[in-house]
Image (cartoon, rainbow, N blue to C red):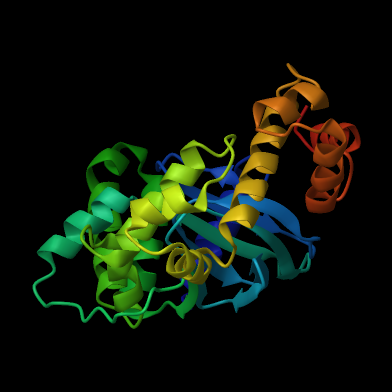
Length: 297
């Protein structure tokens, strides 16, 4: 893991006022820092590359746990709910990380132009995995962050570096898993289409037969492959999406818990409150009050 990345991230967080995460001038690129270990927090991951420069994190997707430290990265290839926490950090050696959004369209474009074919196995890949990053991939991350010192160059150079990152992911040790998600005609893509349909219609009653039809699979095969990809069953996935969306609604301060529950598809406010507290650790009103206390003034 290049010391240069540690130096860049630490200098950036030392010199830029703000709160964790720092969203940078490069679209889709954020910087993370924590001087202490943190409790697990619920997140809704978008497709991204989560690089650790120093310290370590622990993320849980369904029943799968992924711990990744300096020199490693978590790759998330499909939108998924999860719990994530900083596992190792101290004031002397804070946790330092970089999150780089992965544009599915860009990944597909690069996949179609890779000169050597990537062997794609028949299995459905997991939508998340941990990989070492070194060599050209680590160099890309360093060069991307160095652009923050020359903001005028960002619109011209950053897209090229992001394309290069996509290239190294698609030709690296996990190329087959990344490629399965990028290939438009793959079975995985059909499962992803069903995931997206569930994402769009999360407030409606779930119909496994309809989702299976989108994926062109039998209901049992769809259920199995959906869980292989997302680490959750379709019902679990929908429930967590609903609760994350409700939390966003409540955070705006424009609706109460009962209205938020109804908007995301719950018929019972009491059931909503129980499941909300189970996921976020406190009932809606108390959770939102605590969340607002953590926001900058």
